[in-house]
Image (cartoon, rainbow, N blue to C red):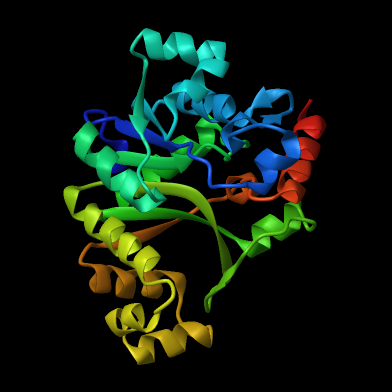
Amino acid sequence: MSRAADPSAAPFTALVLAGSRPDDPVARACGVSHKALVPAGGVPMLARVLAALQASRSVGRIAVCIEDPAVLERLPGLRAAVAAGEIAVLAAAASPSRSVLAAAGSLAAFPLLVTTADHALLSAEMVDRFCDSARGSGADIAVGLAPASVILRDYPEAQRTFLRFRDDRFSGCNLFALLTPRALEAVRFWTAAERHRKRPWRLVRSFGLLALLRFALGRMTLDEAMRRAGRAIGADAAAVRMAQAEAAIDVDKPADLALVEAILRRRA
């Protein structure tokens, strides 16, 4: 029996990153302090994400990471869930990667599912598909990605950033599964990437020039790139291909919010 089908497998603890960077363009455009509070279809995005996680059969407990817990007082339903102990609130650190590291230490739970508060179209079905596939990968860390062919077929107007591989282009889905403690090596690598973003050659050395050239020329498959990345960071890494275009549509800019609103209106 695979780990994905094992009914005795431990449920995921879900961590929602809800911090807001200074002068976030979406929060500013909507007149709120945090992007997590921006309404999509009349419902704050954070509330939508939490509802999807609560409806998922894969998730056992939920934590929200935010630099100002008082912000959550503005959502009555969330306030009640926190008071009842159904949702934990953790302080955000100086960066997303440091927040994940601190939360992993505080929660002391694997597997850990990490997502973001601006994933307004997240559904329980997406969460379960991702978690099942991540468990079945046998990796330490799994990353959700959606093919460009799927995203642009359904939403040709979507403004996504795509990484090019030999088998397709892919966009991130803000879904990460930390399946074992070794996955924290990937988070530490992420922290180094944040620290060395102005001196990227220090990271280039980790992967090797030849591997990076192959990636730049689009000659690696996605799975090959994940294997090489795993060797560089010291943890087995796998990609989970998401079949739903909506899995890759988060809200980074006002145009993304307009697309999300349009999708929600069509559903209604």
